[in-house]
Amino acid sequence: MDCGVAKIILLFISLIFWAAGAGLAYVGHYVIKSFGSFENLIQNKSNLIPAAIIIGISVVMFIVGIVGCCSTLGESKCGLSCFFLIIMLIFAAEVTALVFSFIYRGKINGTLESPIRESLSKYNGEKNSDTEAVDSMQTSLKCCGVKNYSDWTNTTYFSRNKTLPLSCCKNSSSPQCNGKLEQWEQFNTEGCEPKLEKFIQDVLTYAMLVVVAFAIIKFFGMVSVCAITCKSRRSGYEPLYA
Image (cartoon, rainbow, N blue to C red; front, side, top):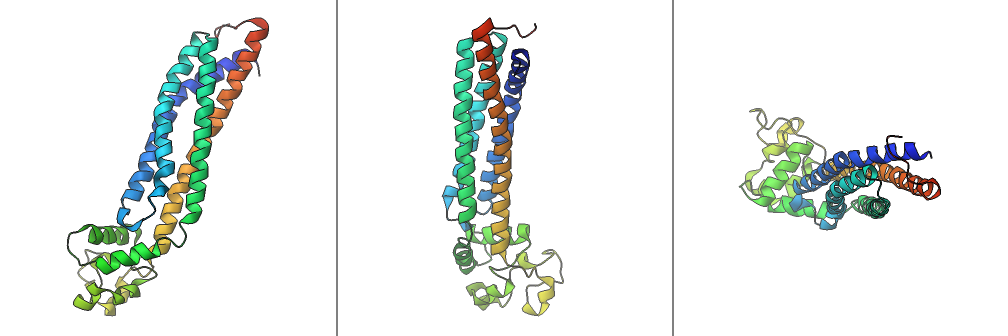
């Protein structure tokens, strides 16, 4: 790679590190917020490890962007060496986050049924964490029960009220849906377990794709630093504006 081109690429990468840091911070926040919406239904909190790593990386990337710009414009070999080292560490952290995301994405299968059933058994229609978690899940995912809406018939809430929660209704504000089983056509008949599982997998997949994209940027950054360093050792550091 030509040294002048490498410098331009490196400067460009340094500048987009700030934007990338903001992007990764958003992704990490999005993953945590998505999991937080169903906190009572997801027992394996280790699923948040990739998000925590991503947020940590985003903070470091703001610092890296500053170091990269100053090192490239100031033609500092020491700064570029530090820049390379930091990029390599971030690259390794992103690979780690990617691996964790891949592992936990595969572990989700079959782990949601028990906590969802437990929340359904604690559901009483009043304002508490379990009731709000179930209503939020059924409304946002447009689902009802664990496998299907009939799961509610085995709950204490149904035994007392002989109705399903209004959050099972396709349109919870519709007066036509009062939760009675005779109106099953008014319910979201699909179960929540497969939909919640798909939702979590989609969130982790989204995070993985973003991490891969930024990891590729880091790779080109490391290649550019290597090209500049090798060129400068042979013929001296070439000014960016030459």
